[in-house]
Every structure is written in C-alpha cells, then in structure tokens.
Length: 77
Image 1 (cartoon, rainbow, N blue to C red):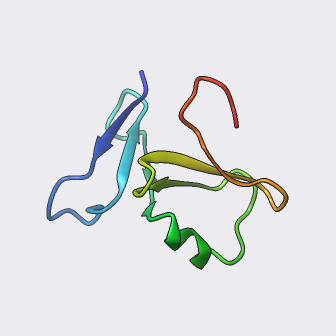
Image 2 (image 1 turned 90 degrees about the vertical axis):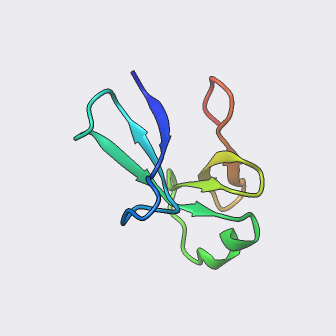
C-alpha cells in the first residue's frame, strides 16, 4: 500500500515528503520546491519528481517540449 507521509519535525528529512510502500525501510524521499523554484532545476531529466508546494501536487518532468506536469490523476501525465 502506497501512502504519502510528511517527514517528522527536526529530522534530517524535514521539508521533504516521504512515500511509503508499506514498510518503513522502503521509503522514497521527494524534494519539495515551489513553482518558481522549478526554474532553478537547470538540467531536469525525464521522470524526475518533485512536490510542488505552490500547486500542492507531485510534479513529473515529462520532456523539454512539455515540461513539468502535476501527477494528480490516476493516469500518467
């Protein structure tokens, strides 16, 4: 079962979201960034993921032509 967790206050991962796949040892740390902050990612690669704190969604970098897309539906962007 996949679920999104907030990192505990004071932890090394504070400011990130954690995606749990059912066991604590199977976590993925997702970086949090504002929409404006996405411009600071100068060389994104296809499939890169960040949590957009402005739009409150998980964003996936599709390609140079499409850019970043919110991954908030049950289908791929």
